Amino acid sequence: MKKIRIWDLPTRLFHWALALCVLGSFISVNVGGLYMQWHAYFGIAILGLILFRLIWGFVGTHYAKFSQFIKGPKAIKAYLQNPKNEAGHSPIAGLSVVVVLVFFGFQAILGLFTTDEIAFDGPLAKYISNEWVDIFSHLHQFNQFILIGIVVLHVGAIIFYKYIKRINLTQAMLTGDKDSQDMSVDEPISAKDDGNHQIKALVIFLMIASAFYYIFILRLGT
Ligand code: HEM
Ligand code: HEM
Image (cartoon, rainbow, N blue to C red; front, side):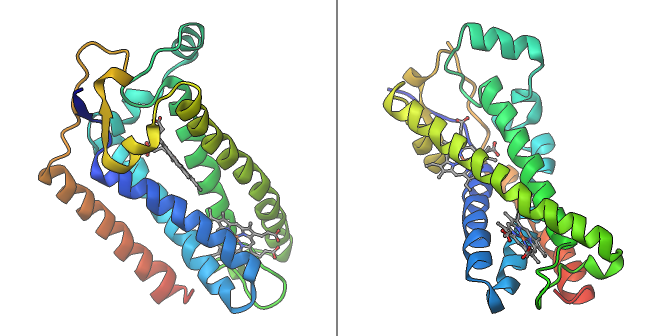
């Protein structure tokens, strides 16, 4: 059985860091009190991770590129009529990646303008009127249910693949590799997950991290 590299290390690190930060943001907001500070840190980290993924979608390796998995309605329809086991994201999985990035990104941006009406304000709340803070806070509260729905569907799809289609996608998101027998592609391309790409990802990540540290911690005092 041949193993093919699909998910490069930066995409895998992005994925598990995102999942951990989402978990952290839900736990910290439910503990509340002083942990609201951690909620803000997790939320801002999520924003940074999403920004990283947006850039990586253009300059990353083969299967990480948006052009590889964001498909039009025609391709989505064709896939639904005749589902194949793609090497990277299927057109439906690709659509769900866009949904995750948009809704989680939206939530993190809203959070910057949100208040808990007790002791904690998002770092940009002081720059807009109380009416807008109220609107953003309500949207931030409401959007959490959409996010929970997305995660339930996401994990549900992974379980469906594992137990019904007998394909372990999680293994690939952990190790980067898929078995060639799990793909209905004759000659799958291997992602070039080499040192050059990893250094490029590290540079992008460090640029985002230092810009966010400067803006949110040093300038806005989060
Ligand atoms: C994607 C990232 C984020 C997620 C998943 C998230 C999730 C949540 C959730 C589930 C709540 C509880 C809402 C409720 O039922 O009361 C909440 C509240 C809150 N979040 Fe976030 N949040 C995120 C980002 C942020 C950021 C970046 C900030 C600020 C820097 C922030 C500030 C707040 C504040 C101040 C509240 C309290 C609002 C209230 O009590 O109504 N959040 N967030
Ligand atoms: C809060 C939790 C989670 C979020 C927000 C999330 C988000 C995402 C995102 C954005 C992607 C696309 C990866 C990319 O191309 O950059 C993805 C893919 C994936 N995720 Fe998650 N994820 C979460 C939890 C999990 C969990 C718990 C598992 C496994 C048990 C998992 C397994 C996978 C797998 C296997 C893929 C690749 C799917 C495919 O082959 O098309 N995720 N996830």
